[in-house]
Image (cartoon, rainbow, N blue to C red; front, side, top):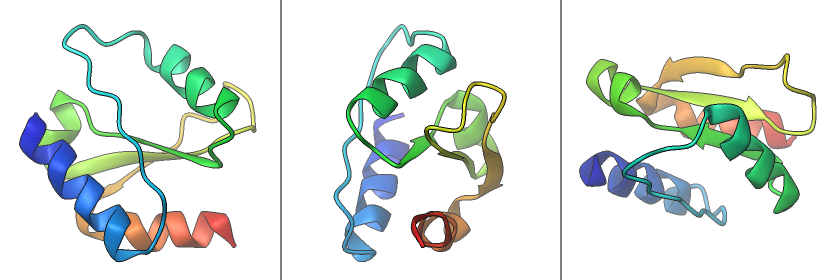
Length: 88
């Protein structure tokens, strides 16, 4: 999983955006993770779990829209474009 996190952080750097990641061996429920991200002031959350890593995707969510917004599952190569679109 470290490899996936590393490549995602690299993609964030290419877009000149500040990026943080939180690695957990026992991840909390995804809604708790997104709530923590919202509290930090982040406008967008990106999740790269085991399923996403295996399928070459990431989940991108615009934060602050409520829990009913589950985010979008997108191809990892399109992550930067999707995040930039959400930030506009």
